[in-house]
Image (cartoon, rainbow, N blue to C red):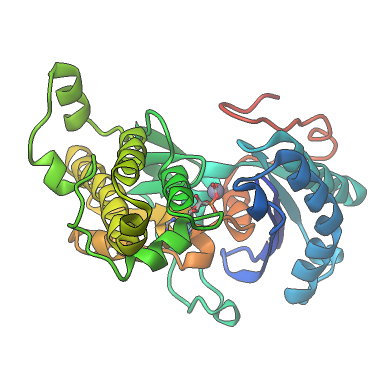
Length: 352
Ligand code: KG4
Ligand code: ZN
């Protein structure tokens, strides 16, 4: 079963082809740069760029796989969550391709896609090596620009949420911190580069190990501190206040320390909850996904947890269509023409 999948939930236009065993045959990603000057993704601009790029990207994915539409047996696309206008471009294109060939179609949940990146076998020509797929059961930490959660993965086609962020996503915290430090958008990778020259213990931010060891205040806070949920609003505000206290020159001179301490606080709280979830679920196996899983400090720290670990290559952590094809491989599929009325959804459960 050769699968073609599309992903257009945010600002990357992606198409990929995988084979029946989850081996990547092509994985094309076109990242939109037009949003940088706005400091965030502008939904209308994203939709327009997807429209311009999508046919080209599908063509490149087929060509890269040495395939034509004649070889494709299943088509999948992200149905949500994401920006509705952006999602509709990929979803409509995929439905149209499937309908023209009367092929089955698989609507994919974006978060299930991040989990399913772990079921892929990397393709050497994409520079991923040929490592094996990771099989359930495992705990999966998903940390992206829109979501941060801990998923208990018992099957290939779903997961149970055991912890989630109560406010911002970890990637959002990276992006907002980067913006405060005068870096471009998206800021996660840039903040990581700035942090590389800094001292992670120079400043104490909420969520960091040093801050946590001082103990919680009040019962509500205590319950949160002992739970599996995340919160990144506090660390963001703390950086804002710290920057206000410093003169412009000081802030500039200590930018590396600020970035390193800020990154450490985010990574510390991701690790803390992950460690606790591993204990509570009794799952001795961990996988990661989402754009923040491309972060070197997080990748180093999960490796220290001492459990059986699967960390996909960076290109499969950030948004891509190979992970959507992987989810399509195991998820529900609809025969022609049952999928023609499918709609995209911005948040929450699928609507049909
Ligand atoms: O999964 P993703 O590509 O898109 C969403 O589904 O949101 O994640 C994008 C997020 C952005 O917030 C970006 O800043 C963050 O992942 N990110 C990173 C790194 N690379 C991407 N955060 C920290 N360190 C990185 N190296
Ligand atoms: Zn994502």
